[in-house]
Length: 492
Image (cartoon, rainbow, N blue to C red):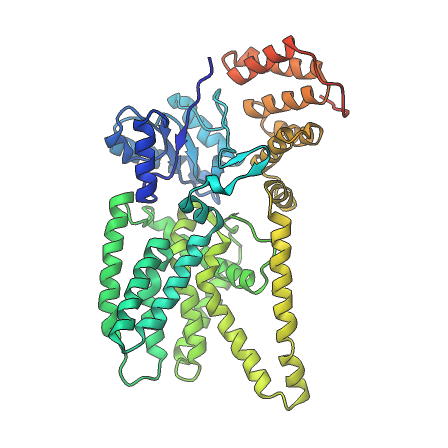
């Protein structure tokens, strides 16, 4: 008999997700969940732990696991029924041994490394195609990063409307701020940006009183978010957090400047940048720029505005950087104006001096710059508009075993088993005991007309893991049916 375990993730992300998980469980669909508050409403639901692991320092992984399991025990009163991790970082070579070691001691299965086969492609996909109409609006926004863009849009509207003296526009601005908060948490910085904006506006009466309702709305949002997540997101390890902001955050700032100026090789997410041995140069450079821009705020208000806008805009996502050890490219939406404002002012100044030949030529570079941005945008889309393209492109820059495995599975499911074999073999060389990879490799050998290799491989798996059902079923299928004719050469 086959058993299907359906897992619900991201409990607490929104009220819609919460209600969906609880309803799915009560209706008999959902049997496993990765959240924590749901345990009180669904006591018979299997409750797993979704680990948040920083991967920059492998020596800290064990301590992070112990801390999070201890917190889980405190909240739930029992060990988790299974483990997985944010962005599947537990598959990374420097992390996996620590996760598996704890899991073996506690007899807790780990997603992708147990006898239970993990089916990752379950997001509106079948027949090799993605059906976006099967994905909810909230999920689609999260997948595409549009939620951050929406929060940025409503946040800018808030700043524009609340600078007016018209009460109606101010009220509309407060409504836009509420919409920005509900779109994405990055918009918590809007009151700070409003205060920054008003410090440089040459108006006789600065509307600081509008900050009162802005902060009131922010307080209501933070309390609502706290009721969902149980935490406002402040990292618990203060020493590690301080080390991140001193040693790593300045380099992150530089990374986003380069990413906004040259939007090339965009990823859905990246691992946090490795710590440089000369980190203090980045820290000194950003501190010097901050002090200089503050002292020159009367003479060069645009510089003061841009520097502080840029740093403030990346503070909210920096908490996720500390916790998760990753950075997302679309976090640059909020920081983009701080980079484009000086660039725009530069071209404006060049064009006002266009009577001189050299300034006219430099000013005319504005047009090829715009064309290059359009071409880079289109090129990024063409390189990454399917899962296969995304995996293949990523493998130009990493040897990530999860990416190789995912690409191999995609090729296997799309009828290109011969192309999938090298990727499974590469994963096998690093993780010889990965049951899912060995099973996929056996299927690839079978489909390319090499039944002896496939059967021998599955038999070796079942010698050590006789209860691994995918291998049992596949071996029975291979022994009772004829293998396809050899379509490509393969080696064991």
